[in-house]
Structure formats: C-alpha cells, structure tokens
Image (cartoon, rainbow, N blue to C red):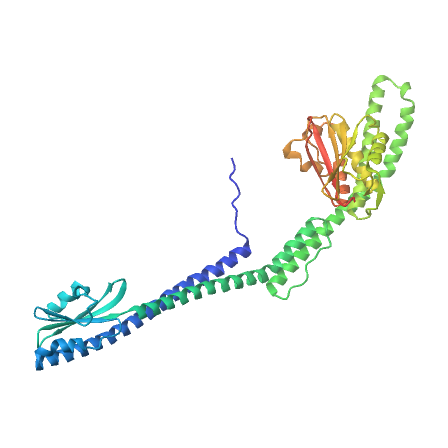
Length: 456
C-alpha cells in the first residue's frame, strides 16, 4: 500500500512565510529587548527619585525628633508625600500616618523587618490593586523607623504604552515583510513562471515556443538552456515526422501494386485449391490492413505537419451521424440525440466523420460491435460523441494509454487493426479543442467519448 503524496506549500508561499517569520522573530526580539531596557531605565530612575525623596523626608523628621519630639505628629501631618503616595513613622510603640485611608499594615512585612534590623531598604508591593515602591529608612540617632510609599501607576502606564507600541510595531513589521516577501518572490519567480508556461506550450505541441532573453546572467543561462532543448526536441520530432511521412509515401506505390496483384488473384480464387484460398484470404486481409495503416500514417503525418485546418460548417448532427453509420455498414446501430442539442452545430464535417467512423470501427473489431451512438450537449457550447459496445471493456490502467499511437488494450492485442484509429480520434478531437476518454458502458462493455468544443 503506497502512502499518499505529501502536500507541500508553493515556493512563493514559502518565501513569503520565511520573510514573515524572520521579521516576526526579529521584531519580537527587538521588542523584548527594548521593553526590558525601557523598564529597567524607567523603574531604576523611579526608584532613585523615590529613595532621594524618602531619605530627604526622613532627615527632616530625624532633625525634628532630635530638636523637639513633642511636635512630631504635626510634622508628619505636614510632610509632602507624592500624590497618591503615603508615609508612616514608627517611634517606639507609636505609629503616625500621613493618610488615614492607607492602614499601617499596607507596607510589606519584609521591609518592616529589614528596618527593624536597623537597615534601610526598598521593596515593590501592591495595595488595592495598585503598584507601589516602598522605601524604609532607619533613623539611627532617634531609633525611629520611617516608611514612604511611592505610586508606580504612571510608570506602569508608560510601560504598557511602550509594550503596545512594540507589539504594533512587530505586527506591522511582519505585515510589511510579508508584502515584501510576496513581491520579491513574485519578481524572482516570474522567469520560472515564464519557463513553466513555455514548457507547457511545448508539451502541448507548440514546438516553436521559445523563451525571450533574460538580462540576468543566471536567468539568461536558464533561458538559453531551455531554448536549446526546445530546438533539439523540435528537430527530432520534425525529423521523425518527415521520416514517417516519407516512408508512408514510399510505401504507397508497392502497396498499390500489391493490391492490384491481390485483386487479380482474388478474381481467380475459385480456381485455387482450398489451402491456397486460405493463404490468399490471409494475404488479402494483411494487404488491406497494411494499406489502411499507411493511409492512417499519412493522415497523422499531415496532422503533425499542421497541413490540415479545421473548417467548421453548419451541419445537422443527427442526420450526419446516421448517414455515417449507414455508410460504414452500421445500419442497425441506434443513434440517440440529446433533446437539448440544437438542430445544427458548427463542426468540421470530415473530422466528425473520421471520429465517428473510427469509434464504430474500433467497437466492431475490439468491442463485440457497437450498441449505441449518442450525441449529447455538454455545458453551453460543447457536444460529446459517444459510442458504446458490448465487448470486455477497457481496464482502468489502460484507459489513458489506449489513445496513444500503436497502443492496444489487453483485449485487442490478438485482433486485427492498425493501432492508429483511436489516436486519430484523439487528434481530430483535439483539433476541435476537445478531449477523449473511455469509461464503462451502462450495460457492460466500453463507452468511448469525444468532446468537441464550441459547436454553437
């Protein structure tokens, strides 16, 4: 059991993603670095100002305690703390607060223990969901403890604004990089797209397809290599086509002579012994088959050389299909016409005849005989010619290859035929801008289809 083919992203998409991811990673790294530096600077500056102010207020209180301890309550009340901040003074077992809305327990316990241990320090904390920086000062000369809290709301707001700007910048940079990657990949892959288009045209039969010169040396080498390859392919195909055409033309004369000689012998068939009659019948069948093969090869050679054009004319498809069936000896095959099909269509009458006649002949020799001919409308402007048979059908593995030249299905390998009939059907259908395919007929057997485009 084979695994499913792994789906990969288009090259242009991968280039764009590479640009985007690179810009995103660089933007995130730059944003994180910038934010860390800005935070360190702003918080450090804020902490430095807070310590300076706290130590200044602590010195004022320490001087007043040394001069007149009885007025300390008035001094604490007149302290100028920063807006939104508050302070606490602990003298012995007494606590003085600058703002009654903030309890004495608002200050962190760890900072209180540090000051009680006769050290000064600072600590970040939150109270009522607001950030603060607390500074604790130990007043050695008086043994008092001074605490002051400074709000960090403005600092946090500034940091949030910086973070938002960094995120927006990273997203913007990513989008710009994606647009740049898309533009760059489109510009870089444009020659590759032209190469793919030229290769597709070459593969579809445009042997004169060539790439225009490129100014870039690397791309110029690619264009030159492609053009050299196209020249080699065109030369080889034209040489093989000329060879097939020349051989076919050269064979016409001896085949004509053989046919005339065989007809003479055939006219005296009754005078020959039984074994000679069987040999003569075999020779007649093989000469006829050889003659038809040469005619088919000549027709394919003209098609390959572009010597045959499509001459569309208005025809009645039902009547034309019936006449062709009668002309080739298939009077009893029913012709079913889609009621949506218009009374007249625009097709090349000769090509239409070759398509239908070859499909009927294929069904006769390899499908047990044709059982039905259908003409259906497909879409708005297309017509499908279908011929069903009562044979063994075509294996799914052979349904594409059977329209190739000299290809034979498994059921036809030991039967007569040139191996070119279905190839001619494919060529004449392609001249109408259509395609051919085969599937299983509803009642068994095979159903061959030829879709002709732009018939109305």
